[in-house]
Length: 414
Ligand code: SF4
Image (tube, rainbow, N blue to C red; front, side, top):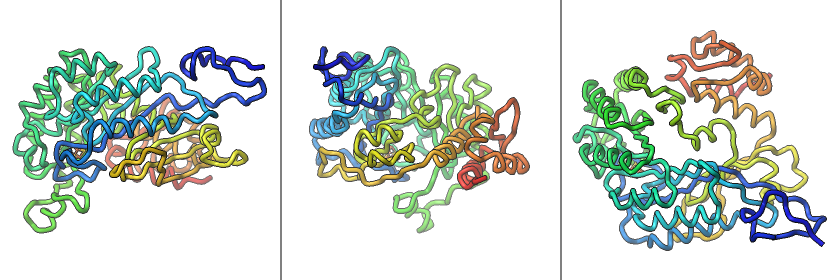
């Protein structure tokens, strides 16, 4: 004797699938999925992300199959799939996979079908995007392209070790918009040698091109990169802190004036075009992450159903995990290298901390539950946070001292 699992239908298994009446109901998996593609055309001079040059050593088809196998590895009999509200394929540079990327999108969304109106984002770099690829991605269900433009100054692009120029980046932005995709552009500020006027020209040109979303990150010098080496050997000046702050301020001013609202410390969007996937990260929604070096987050119930924590560990409400950054040779099964569990008070503090990355900040109720009211008041006294309308939000100064805000909230215990 058996009964159909409510609402499962073709999503949770074969149509008409039944389970014995006395089996516990399956726990729903997250409705957000991140997939990491750790290949790039070549390595940029400042990059310490987990990716390697696409030099032919890794077969694209094997990489795609290994990635799909990782996803299948989560489909334990104790859990059920729910339609994905967001899918984000990042890297690395997923577009170096070419047609294999289209296969990856199609297969991923066969294993984990999309919800109506789902947001499907692919990260892209200008040198590996063609009109044909854009058309195929749209046909496969992709709705959004996040393009690593970084700068529209050719000398800056050369210094960053990027393998595209400004004209190519603008062509790809226009082609993606023309193909019907929403487009976001990533920009880097504070690059040595880039004048303030050139930075303003980059901001204006990217908005003129019609993007709906811009992310602005300060150049960070990471140990072990060619850029860090050049600075250590005196071949390159280090980034100037004051110039970087001025560039961040200018980005806020220009982008806001041009109709892109700042909704997170580094992210601006035309209203209605905010990244739903990234917003899920900042608002505490569980997500599956797959691919070498990828991270994911599960709630306690999901983690228990998947056997990642013992069934009687009911005090654990959140689990963060990371895949080992060693896709080479590729591993087909779950190979989690990092694992962190959180109790309810810890998860609430994390929610309050992440919430302060966003312009809308954190509601009184969450600050109270997280025991962070005292920390918030001390941040208000220091001019980093403002309290109005029942919410705590970062001030302009607070955007520049985000780490101080996060540290005080994380350390808050009342
Ligand atoms: S394209 Fe992005 S991930 Fe790839 S090497 Fe450059 S900065 Fe790193």
